[in-house]
Amino acid sequence: MEEEKFETIIVHSAVYKTEYTEKYRRRIKWEKPNENMLHSFIPGTIIDIFVKPGDKLKEGDSLLILEAMKMHNLVQMPFDGKIAKVYVKSGDKIPKGTLMIEIAAK
Image 1 (cartoon, rainbow, N blue to C red):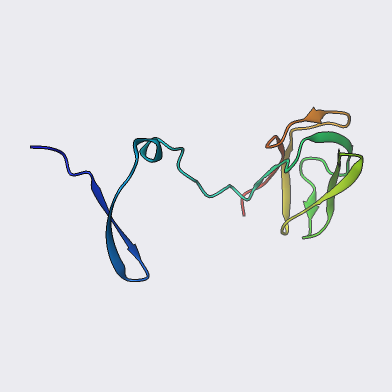
Image 2 (image 1 turned 90 degrees about the vertical axis):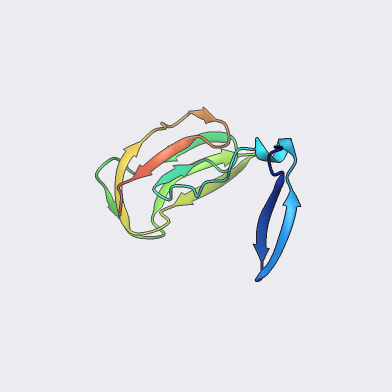
């Protein structure tokens, strides 16, 4: 007996049967990012770091400056917390997606 190729999806309480492509089935599934891990949003150079592990900060406090395309981007604390680890140092040239700072779990 042939395997069922159709999948059931529900959109706004309407039920649909659809067939997924093999490429779709092999895709890398999306995962919610860990908000305690701050990654670079663009490639650039670390100009200055204002924090060290153990620092307790408030939302909006400055963490570091990331230079990209001749612009200085100030990276700020997304929420109140404590710095667990700093993975970069001044002068580092980093690609997009590099882990820069880890914030201790809430």
